[in-house]
Length: 102
Image (cartoon, rainbow, N blue to C red; front, side, top):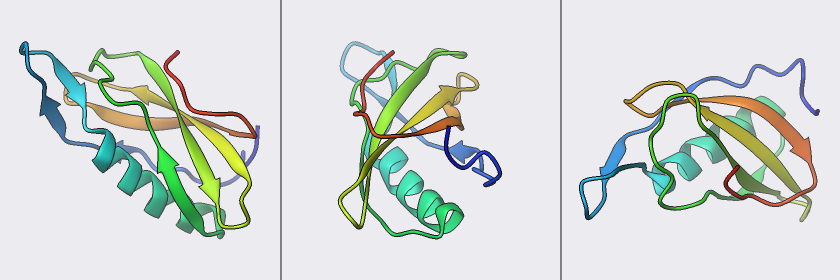
């Protein structure tokens, strides 16, 4: 695990109501907030973040996003949904890998 000493703040992300009344994480907001937060906490430019769309809001669930750094290296960040309001916490940042649902 990388950045064990780096404070990775909790993210507060708005919800997006999908078609059939399901509540899902707003992936665009999550990506924007992660990009800003990780650039600051890592002290390294994050060029892009890709998170899965359609992630259902279920307290305790985790999912991963792919983080591309300025130099072209790709890391993976694991997020945990803390509550039904889709408050998110970064629980792990791993070198290499690609984003996916867990």
